[in-house]
Amino acid sequence: MQFQPYHLYHIYNQGNNRQRIFHTEDDYQTFLNLYKRLIPSRCSTIAWCLMPNHFHFLIYTDEKCLLLEKQGGNLLNPISNAIRVLLSGYARIYNSRYRRSGSIFRQKTKAKCLTEISLDKSQASENLTYATVCFHYIHQNPLVAKLCKSMETWPYSSYKDYYILNHKSICNMDLAKKYCGFDPENFAEISNRLYHLKMEKEE
Image (tube, rainbow, N blue to C red; front, top):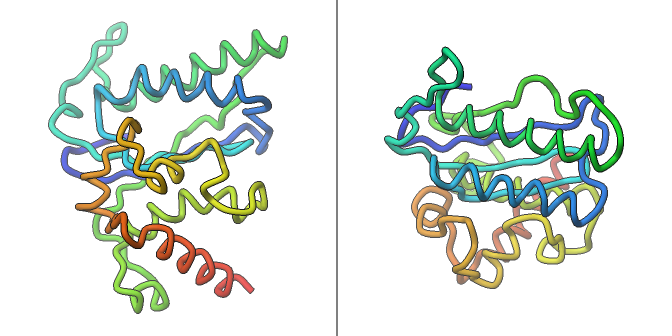
C-alpha cells in the first residue's frame, strides 16, 4: 500500500475465505485497542467499522506518512507498516486464543484513495462527494448485513460517536466536517436517506 499526504483513504480487508475474524466482544476490543495504539500517531481516523468477517477504516494522511520507518533492512511507509503490525499482532492473539495457526486475513489489505473518484448518477443528484458516500457506507455495513436494527446500536463502529457527538472518539470530527459533509444537525437523517437510496438501487 502506498500513501501520499493530504488524501483520504478507505482501508479494508477480510478474513481468508471470508472466515469470521471476530467472535466475541473481546475480539473486537482487542483489534480496536491495537489500532488505537498503532494508527493515530501516523494518520487521522475519520470513520471505522468492524464486522464479523471484515473491517473498514477511513483515514486522512498528512506529512507524517512520508517519514519512512526502518524494518529490518527495509524502509517502509509508516501507515503500511502500522497496518501490517496491526494484522499480524491481532492474528497472533487470535491464534493463541482459539488454538489455531496460520494467517487469518487476506494477503493484501486494500487502500483506496478517494480523490477524484466519480459518483454514479443517483449519488451525484444528491450533491454528494465520494468521500461523503464512503463515510456513510462504512457506517451502513452492519445494517445492510442485518446485524442491527439501527446503525447507532451496532457497538463496533464510529457511527454511535457521531450520533451522540462523543468528542473522546478516535475519529477526527473536524476532518469529517471538512471532507465528508458531516453535520451534527442532520447526520442521522442523511445516513438513513443514503441507506434507503442504496437499498432501492439494489432491489
